[in-house]
Image (cartoon, rainbow, N blue to C red; front, side, top):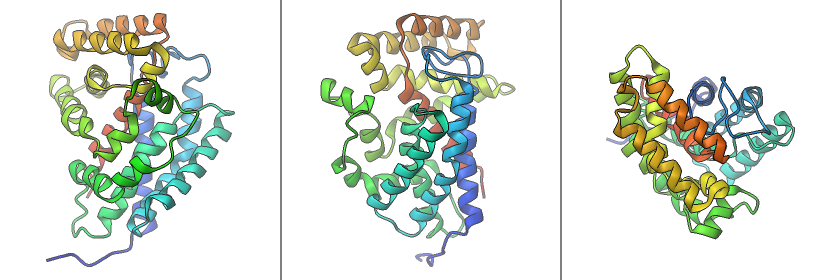
Length: 285
């Protein structure tokens, strides 16, 4: 029997936005994360540090709640885009013009809207990762692929030069790499190192890095840079990932190689945060 429609209360939307914000902070506080900013260092970046990313995450948190409420109300992609634009403006204001989380606003934002849509129809609020990803695909997939492409984004530049689908394709297809790669690797990491949540996040991140066609890597290093990054991550995993003795030193060595080449897999960072968000929502009842 189909459940009756239930409006989403603001408290539930705040729960979703809190989970999104926590996922961004957990991603930030993960090291070694080759080439990326963390609480330890700035990776391959000279334009941002952990304080930049923390300020950005705080500035966009309210908009994740707005997106959840919009999803619960049955909003179309156009309405979600307007909320996303407002979130991006708040982000740029908080960072002095630095793009810290544009990709996260897009991917996490869509899944916050999906959490709202699921709330409105589910009897027991089963925020299962597969259901939320499929909701994005079914409700907004066509509009995602047919919508405008930001002219100045790194992903758009990589799409034009290399034909890489990037974040748009991942979202429109229901985030298949998160379901097939990131979440299983994150949970395997917890089995390997049950007392070290950071280790689990690192394991999940390297699994993404080994398999994702990250458009930020393509932008910075071209096809050669992407291939180097994927092979480096695959090599770390083939040796056991976080199960190998001295895994942190091994991951840090990859991190240094990325810094030397100025590589930064920002798309993988966004997908790690999305994976952490989906994983956390599954525990909420």
